[in-house]
Image 1 (spheres, rainbow, N blue to C red):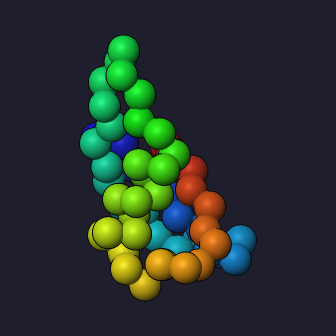
Image 2 (image 1 turned 180 degrees about the vertical axis):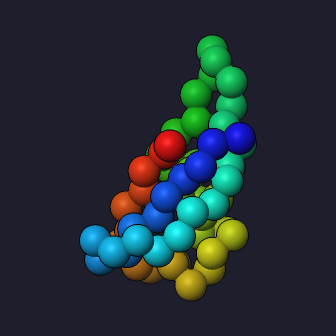
Length: 53
């Protein structure tokens, strides 16, 4: 499990915990974005940035 920090308009929006696919497979940005939209539907259609910690 990894923490994904979400920023909306350069302000901290929140942190969610996500599970990433272990190597040799990779988790793409689109998969992360889709899961965030699924879990936080208020972000749909908005431009947000993420930081994985």
